Length: 231
Image 1 (cartoon, helix red, strand yellow):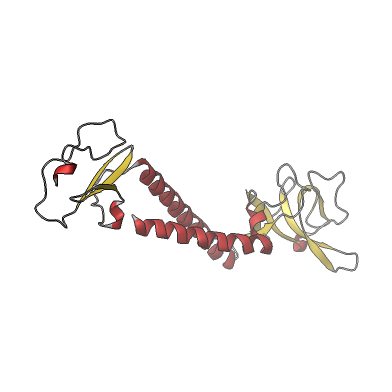
Image 2 (cartoon, one colour):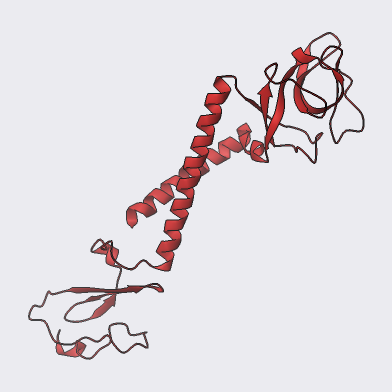
């Protein structure tokens, strides 16, 4: 280093007096990139014969893997792991459910009303064991096709059996409704018995929400991929 730099601390704002510039360079274009890192953070300076300039090591070199990882980098790595695990978990669940659904082993539907609250809320997804493989009984929550007096289908309700039988029709009622349903569905009207409830997820599976979530998920993936590439 040239004489004006001798005895100067590498980090002017630091109260640590252990790092100093000593000696001089024999070449006018010489440069030294100095980085110090620990669990509290990372600091870098570019040293030339004339000055000491704060810098970023990523502009010049790729950090070795054995370098101490900072707190910010640890948080970033944890976030990447969480999203990776979440992605694998959701993929496994979706693939498993798709296989089971295609084979007819289970069915699913999104609950649209609060007639079964508090047991089942609007936006929940109910997983059904199809009939007649699973025989409905009193106390079960079933999904059945509601029909007009003419026999025309008007929709699917998910309500609890409170009486009746398969031959004469079941008496069904929403837990949150004041009175039983008018229709007494028979076994042919019941598509399945609820055996599992996934709360809230159904709210995100509407066309409007999917139009928001898909671009958001893609953007988040691109950001994380960019951050990963910058490491």
